Structures are given as C-alpha cells and as structure tokens.
Length: 181
Image (cartoon, rainbow, N blue to C red):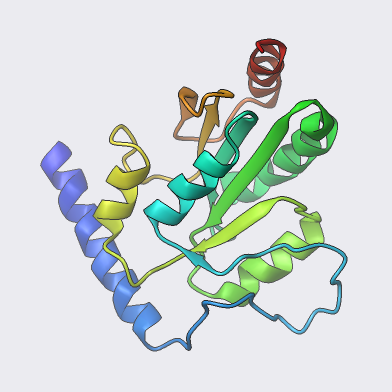
C-alpha cells in the first residue's frame, strides 16, 4: 500500500512538474490584477526548505501550517476557519503559514485576497520533486490535502491531521499550546 502511494505521488509530482514547466517564472509576488494591496498575501514559490526556514523564523510562537489548494473542496471549506483562528489568536502568539498547491497561481492569489489571508502564504514550487517536498515537511504525511500541523513555541510538531480539521478541536489545541510558555 505504501509503495502504491509513493508511486502515485511520484507520478503526480512528475505530472505537476510537466505542467509547471510551461508556466512563466513565479518567483516574485504573483499579480492577479486585483488591486487589493492592503496586505502581503503571497510570497512566491516555496520548496520544503523554504517552509522549514519560515517555521524556524517563527520560533517562540505557536504556528499553524496548512497545505491547501482551491481545487480541494475541504481545503476551501476550512480556510475561513484558519483566518478566523489567526485573527482571534495572533496577538496571543499564534502565527500561520499556508502553502497552496494550485496549478494556476492566479487562482490561489484571488482566493487569498478574498479570504484576507494576512499571514505568510506560499505557492508550492512545482519544479521540485513532490516526494522530497512531502518527506521534507513530514515523513508521516502522505501528501493528501488538506493537511494541517500545529507547532509549539519550540518549533516541535504537536498536532497533525491529513484531512479537514475539526475547528473546535483545533482551537482547543491552539489554546492549550498558547497557554504553555
């Protein structure tokens, strides 16, 4: 079963890489043509090391990491909860990093603007090997979306769910982690 999943991930990664090779360079902030510049909502493409570096930079905070895409219905359904949780707890030490797995950057761009996602957002770099991205983030992650982690103030993963999260459960875990100094 694991080999089948790994082979499927390698195939999907190769397919996504082939698609992305025809796109223009997206290393800079993506401009969807939407004029809402009230917050920085996308910071170019990211490989697993970029995400891990961003997590390390936020040491001292509780960090919610979420992998999502606009083509993933559960991702779209839970994203407003991420924004609400961030807005509710950011002054108490919560930070958020999201990574979009969209094939069309403008879709992610428009979605982030509509959600007012005023936290660190990345677009996955499809020029990398998908397997190494997945393993680089978490060896226990199969690559399914949505996927959500909570990291404590020391940068250690304390919670992981590879499906739509339960908002009340996630909020409780955030509260518990924020109370620990």
